[in-house]
Image (cartoon, rainbow, N blue to C red):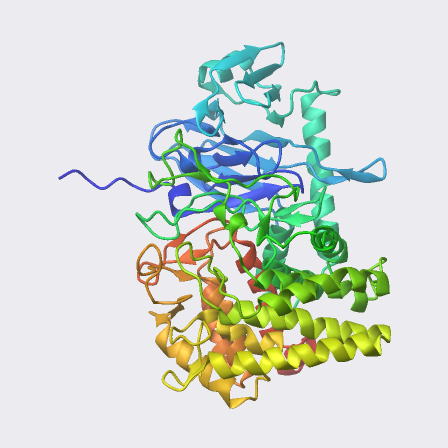
Length: 605
């Protein structure tokens, strides 16, 4: 029997995002760009190595040549979205690679082109390197049509042409020929547009301005005393998931990284789920990242005010674009574990939690005085049709928060979020002095609340269950206190937290549920459930236990401090799409809740 194949950093999900609000790419711990959707977050990946199996295509890297073992180390520049990777050969010759996407203010507006810069510098000795640029088009087809100019190369074959502008020897790049790196060189990858200044000057200027932008942005954040670096990294990562042109925040940068090994639970997460709004807006609000929050609320509100059609659970970064699901046959999948899906069938499902999520998001316009656009009676009237839909649907079966493809029930979370829609409308009506509307929505919400609590409680389980009139447990029940359905002091919530913590835990990791679904029994833990559990424990007075669970989750990040969607309870290996917005928002929200205050920390010193 042959030796098992060694895993690359990307195979272990040791990848880090860079981006600028228009595009995002993933760089692995060897300095290889393994994923980049171009020219937008949701487009065809020109670098797709993360999903090509054993095929060496769809990447950009720097190979250092020399005798002995090559060593690498890679990390973010502190408080930025800039990555530095150092490669060293067996004789100590070393090269530094700096990767970033330009992001700064220019001409009084945001400058964030669909562009990546790689600055490659000799660090020690006389390193010999080869530069390899092997893009793909049309989801995995190698870009074989190359045009070489005086200082650029054009890669065509798809909808968009990728242009490489460089001051490195083009012939060496075209032929992947090793050469002595005697001075810094830069690769500028982006649209097919000429560069108006020298490559080196642009590289140095853009790097300095991008570093200054991120340092300035981080200085404006409100952060907890404990876990500061982790919360800052989560905040930057969350911002990298936003498409600033529309304000949409996608669930992850990738598609089809499996939830577990050798499964077909492979989904495209490059879109915006309305249910994320509650967690994301809470995180941005706690950080004080009001501009990012405001643009996201505007995106949500744009969808919400179209009252002529029911809400979908998920939308594209441009809301009206089709998300029809298909399989990309040219990509073998992450570690060969296909299929690779483009689009998401969940957009066609009925998921009733969307109504509460949207109203929760929009409610910030009424209560947050930092926002320039204040919610008024006109906006309230535009939101009321969503409340009517929620009232009508709260006892109708749906696919639930976990998007079951072959089963529908009256899910407790969906029904609770429908109640949230009506409850928050009642509260907003009070704020606006609309007493008749406040009474109307309060009466309906209280009837809904009583029905949910009566039918979701199971005497057999001694807990609130995942669906009305069913016995299966579900981790989403941990949210009912935070959402306001029950106070944390209510014995039903306290018992539910303990039962769920006992029955859904696997080796210390919380499962979403353990009952079989369309694909069999789930194998991995959905990481955001750890944050929900930690928060719930703190709410019922078990704060130290919550802090322990939170600290353990933080120890499970990849080498860049980033989390994916899932973790295997036995191996500790990360699985699922990355970076996961749910999880990065969880780091922020739970970190804020469980941290000592600055006053407490100083008094403990």
